[in-house]
Image (cartoon, rainbow, N blue to C red; front, side):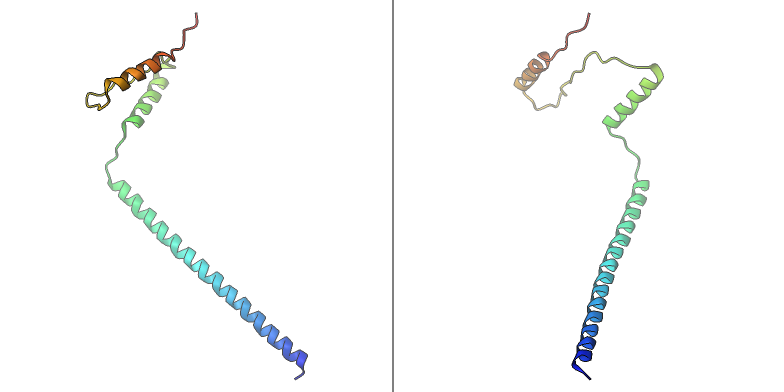
Length: 114
């Protein structure tokens, strides 16, 4: 065979080998992603099944928001006159922090329009 035909044949074999190698790498990546997706979906299904078995609970913030929304729908709009925080009896905060907070909140009083 002539040298050019041999070179062309070697070039074609090397090119086809590279193409098959890249296709094998792509197939491996797709397989890894697919198995990860299957595991993720199975985990979601287990979590959903476990969530249905648990007793439903509502935290206090959600309960207050639902109650406020229901009251607004039933009785109309409300006007908030004042918001204050009551310190719980089990609070570990001292009187200094309570007094400082009261002074800070007192300085932000918005005057009423007349």
